[in-house]
Image (cartoon, rainbow, N blue to C red; front, top):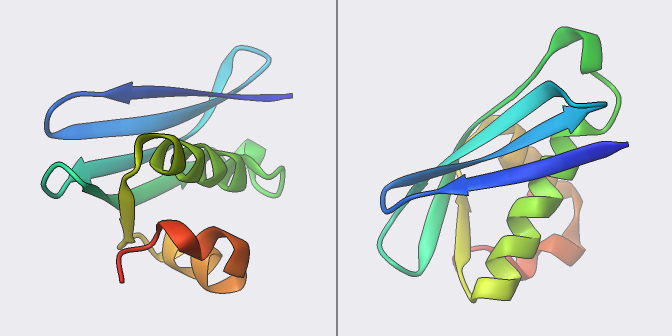
Length: 95
C-alpha cells in the first residue's frame, strides 16, 4: 500500500510517497500566489518504478487542490503528461 504525506509552507510543499514506511518518491511544488501552485518535480526511486507511486502523489495533489479550492500548473514533465492523459483530473488546472 502506498501512503502519501504532504508538507506545506508559505512558498513550497511536497507530497512524499511511502511503501511499507520506506520513502518511494517525492513530488515538489512551489506556490504561485495564494490560489495556485506549480508542480515542478516528480521523482520515484528506481526500485519503485511501475508501481503507481507517481500517480498516487499526483492524485494526492489533485485532492488537495480540490479540497482547498486551488489550481495546479504542471511544469514537471510527468505531471503534465498525466494531466493530458486524464481528463477527469483537468478541473484543477489553471485555464
